Length: 153
Image 1 (cartoon, rainbow, N blue to C red):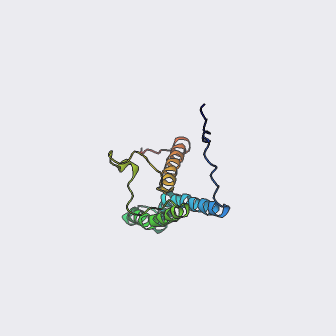
Image 2 (spheres, one colour):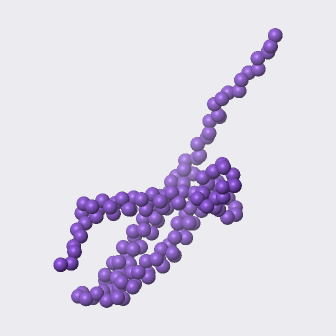
């Protein structure tokens, strides 16, 4: 006579959804990162091109506006990028995935490291990659269908 033991329930317990306020703050931070990446890749260069166009004189172009655009754009990007890092830090802190110590990118991990990969690096990297891919696709569409290439004659 064998006694059967009850089998454990294979379904995991339901995961509670985070509070609405937490989700709203999280979505606002991600939206801020998306807007910031658009400003970083489009707004800052467009601003400096407009400033360069305003200070240039009609007729023969001078080097000063071109130098201004070529120097001020990356400098502005370097000063703006930490703001996106702060948004990502706040998002990771809000999600509870903030960890201490240095972080190593997945592509830079040793082959001897643990095989279990956790994605607790935040969403900034994914937002930036998506913004660059979308910008490249839109630029390709623009130049393929609307851009005009004028060759010197």
